[in-house]
Amino acid sequence: MEIKELLRMGVDKLGEREYLNPTLDALLILEFLLNVDRSYLYTHGDRVVSDEIVDKYVYFIEKRKIGYPLSYLLKEKDFYDLSFYIDEGVLVPRPDTEILVDWIINTAIEKYQNRPINIVDLGTGSGCIGITLAYHLKNAVIYAVDLDNKALEVTEKNILRYKLNNRVVLCNGDMFDGIKSLQLEGKVDIIVSNPPYIPSQVIEGLQVEVRKYEPRKALDGGSDGLDFYRRIIPESKIYLNKSGILAFEIGYSQGEIVKRLFIEEGFCNVEIIKDLQGLDRVVVGILP
Ligand code: GLN
Image (cartoon, rainbow, N blue to C red):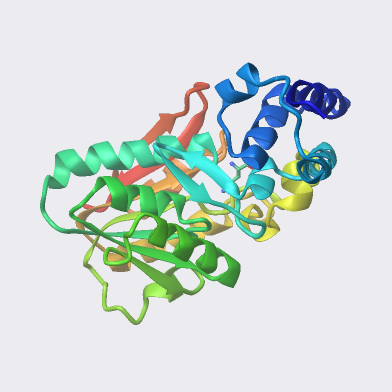
């Protein structure tokens, strides 16, 4: 079959499910299988593709059609200005989370300049937050914590991809348990987390990509979605130094309540930051 026939067939099949982006997904799958870029596909529409590639393409299109996340097929996802290895068992990095990372990079450059700093990333998943911070903040050591072995494996691959093994430390454990033997009490400049924050009963109503294929323990924040904020905010005070920063991604309806949790625990300069859609997406605060 020719490239242009494959693309048309892929777009038709994927188009049967309404919330996919059929053209983009078909292009990305074929680019990946042929190891070429977009302009190649458009300029070589008549190229005949081997049966082996056609079979793989059909398999990928069928998987995608039932909602299997594209990033698990391509094993890759762009995030901020980097690209991460991704596999089943870790949450696919979202553009929403770039807001959190961008705020921390800008704030840390201004506040700490070149002074050495410690950052803890709780529930690192693929490592996209911690590794992007390490890549941009050359003065930072990052402690990337996760309790899931698959997440730690994926994070490790990403650490090695960017040769950051001297500054990103993998920590195995449930939130702060992962760093409790490291004597970091009072020595952490920034604690960041994109914890699970979806209310348990909401998960069943999410699109199949998320509900069926992404790890539930990276999504489920308990009955009101706030379990992890309630755990992390008080405990963060043991590890943060004076004027240390705590920064979270949140669900769009959680801004005011998470802000209140910060203030109840004595944080100051508590701010809600909006995403590109104008929705509350990040809450940050400073420990006086
Ligand atoms: N932003 C993710 C979603 O909407 C949720 C991530 C999380 O719970 N931390 O699917």
